[in-house]
Image (spheres, rainbow, N blue to C red):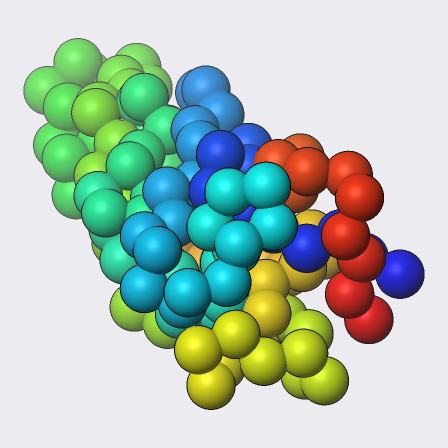
Length: 128
């Protein structure tokens, strides 16, 4: 069984240099210890604030800074470009008419990063 993800969960991007906390607005009207998340909580800079610096050469700002530095990888500030909801979630548990977010879900960034959940934010509520 997976853990239910709530506001404050720690996320990590494969191209980010630091983790960030998931922000869940109380629109789903489901509380665990804090507001619980569903797969639609993926809005950049609202739900996923960013991972400090981005190191993906697929990101145009990183590619431009690296080219200006004569090929030396130059990280630039992370502004996630998320175009699709979290993948899978918990299909049998619905929050706000959408699948609940569990700690095995992943999110893809348009700049080739894979965002995973490091810590669910709580450890008492499980979902399938």
